[in-house]
Image (tube, rainbow, N blue to C red; front, top):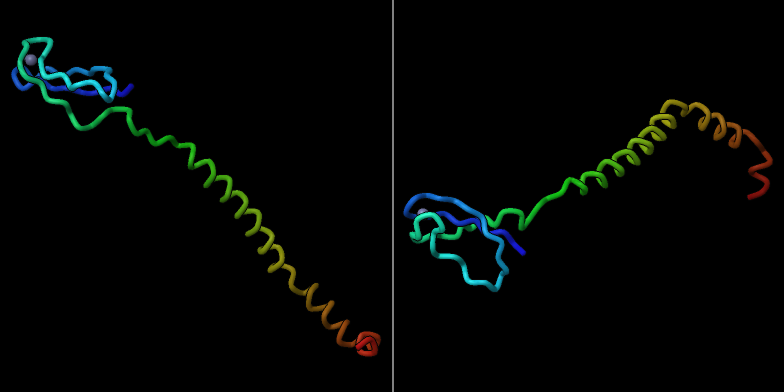
Length: 97
Ligand SMILES: [Zn+2]
């Protein structure tokens, strides 16, 4: 059940009322029996929980790992060059083709 907020026009008394959506809105102030208006901001109807950020953090951690791998590969490019150089020099590779 949503909580509706009301404010009295007469005495500015503000109060919350648990009501079903189908229930008619209150129009009488409990303090002075003046006319009250329902405030639009239905408190607690929509709450953004921070859980979504957990996914972002998890993904960023994964991204960090991938970035670290890239960094390590970039740090040691000489190994790759040596392998390629040996292959080019090796005559066995050419014979297979
Ligand atoms: Zn009032």
